[in-house]
Length: 472
Image 1 (spheres, rainbow, N blue to C red):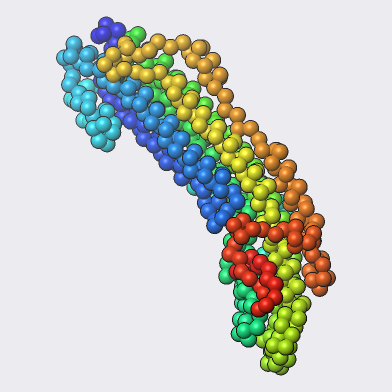
Image 2: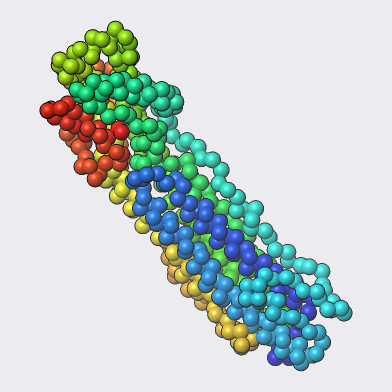
């Protein structure tokens, strides 16, 4: 062994220190991938229709940890083989005695570079490693990428006051004990309707950015395996040392491939964010129409319920005529119900699209397949026992591993068609017709109670019929 391997002990210490740093960098990328690439923050809403994507992200979050486990097993085997060979040289030359256990990383606790014995020459540090953490930054805030309804922001800002006015009138009407009308939701329109259907496209853009960040970090990380091969030449010479260089270059090829897979994943998240925003815009447009109808309801409540003289007249009419006294208010509320139901009628098409997106993300699992191609070193065999490799064959084997994220074009088209229908059925000018006509009719959008994405409530009169009011 000694004839096949010569060691520069100072450079060997530098080499082991760098190898432990590479191991630590893998842990940093793993943590970032799990927390940022696989973040479910853009889908964390009650009854979110995009739950299939969220569920898949939870599953994919463990994929990089699996990859890291395979990598560390192979890496620690290589370090162990180096230690075995170095011990053999040390025993033969009897030149220096290293505490080799310090180089075994997690097995013996955190790595601490040892004090190199006196008289051991250390060459100038060459091939410094690149840092990966600067690339692992938190994704920035997302931005709108398509035109939104200019009135949406003012509608959402004023919705609380509008809702409180209507709820005050509803409470007063209900106090007579003749009719029963549910109060409007205390939630914002975004939380109540938009995000449960679309997810938060601004946050989902962060998933895509995180993919690009990991790709950049993996570029640096994979490059570090090549850099460390230069260190190994300075530390371990001879034929046996040359075999180590070849193995380190394989790590470079594999980890670069892993980075490419993650980078391609950003395109899936970009597509999800784009469709999420399209859903949000269409739903926002429908809700702007609904809010204008509610504004009309609010105006009637202020003049007929919350004013002193108006209430005197209306209360008498409600007692004698029941809902006939507030038919216009009830009709407007029913039209609002219809619009809400029309929005949630998108649920099936969106779910189908979300499921196809979740299937696309399964391609991340191929990262583990790539890393599994790394040769397994046996510690007891030393560097001389490293499995023989043919770089050309190895590259061919890597090229045979496919990682196709596919697309969700068919399901996207189905959602697009549903969104077009929603825009057609509930145009902005619908709020101008006094509530006399709806879009395509409330019966087309009836939902069973177990399909409702918001708490239902009855709108009815004792002895009369009732209808579902999904706005409580």
